[in-house]
Length: 308
Image 1 (cartoon, rainbow, N blue to C red):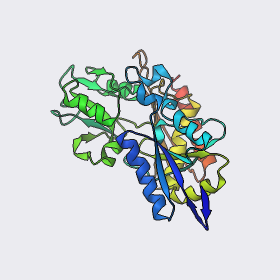
Image 2: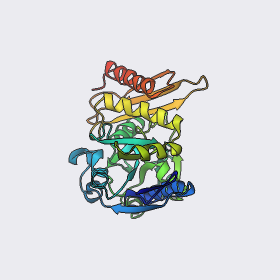
Image 3: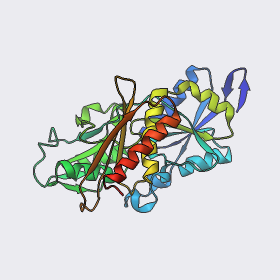
Image 4: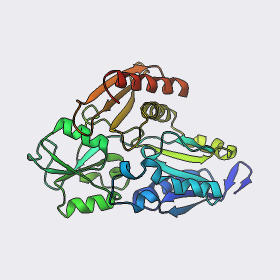
């Protein structure tokens, strides 16, 4: 990569090769090309894409979707990596950093079903697919009578399993469906107060090597500061709780009319032995230090309420 005045040429984006991941990388590619940069894609298959017969919580967690992309950055085969922010571990390896967070898409979870228009319409004992422990505990709190079964694979694979009749309904991120033009598959987008999203859900993050100052400066033009602050607060909750795919934790931040940031968080027991814990807190968050502190407060409140 080299400088052309204020323009960087030959920027290579590392991306997973699923249809949704490619859409996300192509979206960033288009934004950079609009600013005069030359950009190409490097498609990679991650360990998380290859392991489909076990839940992520049992095989290594969120980092399985980013390790191969980080290796491409480290080896100089790529300059930036585009991630779904909810798939990014809360602590990046030494030498890597998030350069920006783009404007967020719809952060809500969505119910997808060929026959039923809402969660309430599902019959007793209906089979609902998800491999997210967060979604499992929140669904159980809403409908303890449902059968919740594991569901892995990329978005198209999950929809195909639903259409093949393996499930009565599945729960997916609304953002992915909307980005791929599949919004019509959404039966209902859950109210976040009922189904709190995961930290960072709906947001795209761009990772670079920490020593790439010119890239970090360039990517700043893509940042949506409000969404970066709110997702930073969400990620701070998860970081303080030791959050990973093995923890059934939700954290969602929203800006209030008074300019303060409100965080709602929830923790549930995957074994069903303890009640669902939900808290909220709000305070000004004008910078990342305040956002991080607010997330830490929310995590402390969760622990005080019984989360562990």
